[in-house]
Image (cartoon, rainbow, N blue to C red):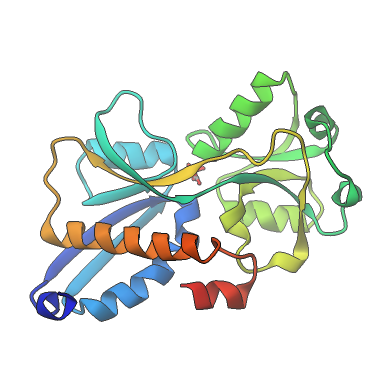
Length: 230
Ligand code: PGA
């Protein structure tokens, strides 16, 4: 039981997560650390390409990502949805429209994540599939910086819905055909690697926490609701 394990677990947990996981994982670490006060944690937050580099260098115990590597053999476990949606400023003219054709996005200045971002490759994949050419006005290496640029009127973008957990009022999510792009967060580690007891404990903890969140209807776009869910 938890009471038995408490106190027995001492040591380090090294996590490396993609940029969108930073909206959830640190919050979920709070209760975990209260359960296991002897565990110290390091958390790296970066994009998919750099996560893959870290994984190949065996730098961390456990990884969170939404695109499973093609050429590297891994164990993976889905735990929460991570849809990509079209973000615009709250007062954008398209905010009131329904079922916007995807080609229409080509007429708006677009803000794109940096090369190496999984968000970028998913967005580019969808646009290619539908022959859509967007005008990339600005390229930025941070979801948060992109949100600020959108709020400042520089353009629109496609980001994980989880990046909108707090400042909902400033943005609208456009109703565009073929969106949301469905994705999932996975817990990942190299195939053949034996998880430490601590990493395994965290793995189970995160699965349980995600199950509870999903049972309660998922993460809700409202600051207070999120706080109570987590
Ligand atoms: P990225 O990944 O930071 O590589 O774009 C984010 C995500 O997949 O949610």
